[in-house]
Length: 118
Image 1 (cartoon, rainbow, N blue to C red):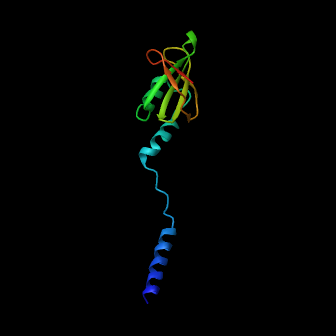
Image 2 (cartoon, rainbow, N blue to C red):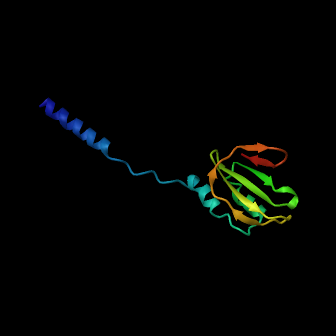
Image 3 (cartoon, rainbow, N blue to C red):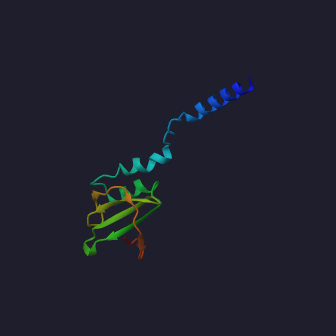
């Protein structure tokens, strides 16, 4: 009788362990960067893009394209990901292209907000 009870307990324990639990629902903090990046749009101003990304970007930097005023603004989405927006020349530069979320490159700081991405 003891052996039968032991087999029942072991069987029920194994059956309970084999069930997979449903995946955890993503929380708002996890989805916030992706949802924010999706709101980056061509024709928004650089300041609008920066304000949008401020709550989710842990860092940012700018690659300047010579003397034209055109530049690429990089945002660190997390320690391993970055996204960029290409900004046209002029003081009220507008976003002309939005890059994909991509693996974060190595950022080399120069002066101010200037970086090189390797």
